[in-house]
Length: 358
Image 1: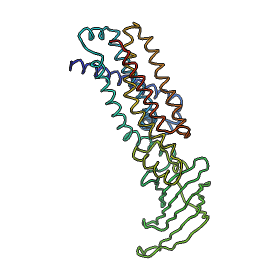
Image 2 (image 1 turned 180 degrees about the vertical axis):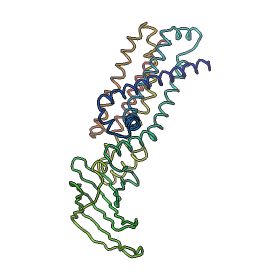
Image 3 (image 1 turned 90 degrees about the horizontal axis):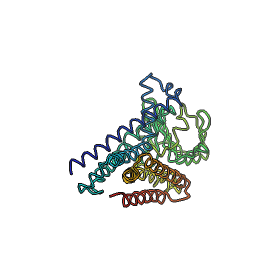
Image 4 (image 1 turned 30 degrees about the horizontal axis):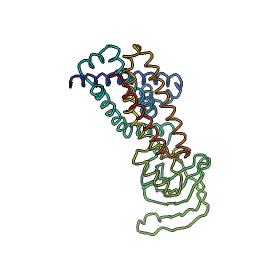
């Protein structure tokens, strides 16, 4: 039995790796065809092209590709068992459906955990690197409930931003001199980013520190409106929070900070719950694919069961997309959307396993 379990798990893993490599190559070809100029503009010849494609795969496509390839790998592993009469022989030998499915299910669960670890490390760093290269801007880091960026003599802290109006909220700016000493700090309720180097700060508190005297108290003044020229400012895109580049812990902190200010936390909350639901969905999709693949024993045609598998994937992604829109627009609570998606997938997998040929 142990040998059989290793055989089934190895078959699933091999199929997953092969299908994932094929999918990655297909994505690379499509990227080259659709955006060859962008790939070449990345610079540094082939190294730049590989960096571009690697960042795109890790930051953008992995979260979509892995659930699909895991589902297909489990489906093909089960379909091969059924079409080659291996499943019939296993049943004749007293092997139950639970015993046959467990190695693949455990492998799918391990894959979901591995995908979560990959996304929270490599995937997030790849997205930050992509944002930095695409916008030609310094990396925006999330610390202590706000986003921080360093550019030239300035350090910027932005708690939140409105992309539609180019407005920043709860802003702190720190200006340093050539020696790195703090020259000026500004706290503002909001800031409007204008053209070029012009910023307009509202309800600003300015603290100016005497040069060369670290012990001296700063001079403080208040400004209802402050026009500020910032040499070499970071681009607008660099100051817009990208919640998809935040870790799970960062998203939770960002949501708490927004809601503490009375702002709407629906968008980051949808990203948080959606990300966790996607990881759980990998294991559930594997569970759903197994009974669909075993239906090949009854239909005697992988083509028919492949159509059913395609329909199941299409329904999953349609529900996932609609739910993401509803959650992001605060029409339905994000927790309800994510829990509903997981519950629907679990019910489908459980029902299919219960009706699978035994």
